[in-house]
Length: 306
Image 1 (spheres, rainbow, N blue to C red):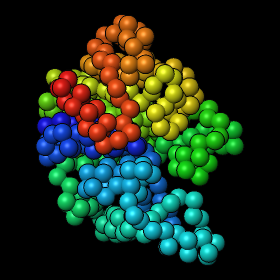
Image 2: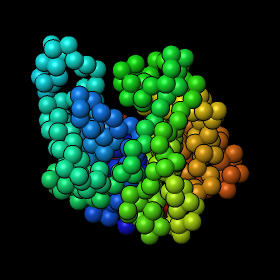
Image 3: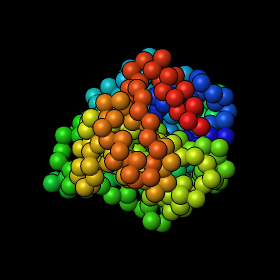
């Protein structure tokens, strides 16, 4: 069994490759839920959905979110009525949010709702939210504190950021299976996801980081940063706001207490010595995943390290 920690589009790309290069039933995927929020009364879990759609073969890989071929008629009509339409919920995507919200209102946990959705879409891999408790990533800006979705989608990450917090994380608990998967896996893979807002919230859930430090499994990370810039999204900007060096070294340093091997781009080979000085084995190989072949190649590189 392989335990995979993920969030965002970079993680989804590697997960797609892994599902095609190994038995998908071997994967237990732990998803960030710090991005979850309520929109028009619906509980939306962006990273859970992206992972599920990717593994089900329904993901819109060009956009990096949502369902391929989806339409937005409902959202357009919400806008006509004066409602907010900045978060692009597609008509098919809406069915997922309606189902999740109904299941939660019926008393199911987020884990149980995720399991029902996973099975309904024919996904063979295990998918676990990091916690059933509410944990919200909050972005501090000069205008005040806002949710990650407001920052990332509504404001298109244009605001200056002075800090990031994970509201509620101190009182949260990892869902049953998360710590067990990390401890019992033959390897743990940390996807090339934003270290602040995708992987950071998972690591902040009590018990998760300790499990990573103590697991006998090899822990392999893949850098989301190449030559000081995020492959996608605002990871470099958020790292700088948190006082981290926006580089592959900066990511490795953030994970150094549990990381065994770190995969970086050849363009960052000059940072190999700095990373290895942290006690982390370093492998330089092509990690950009612009095509399906790229995703499969990257997955093979990671699986070879396992």
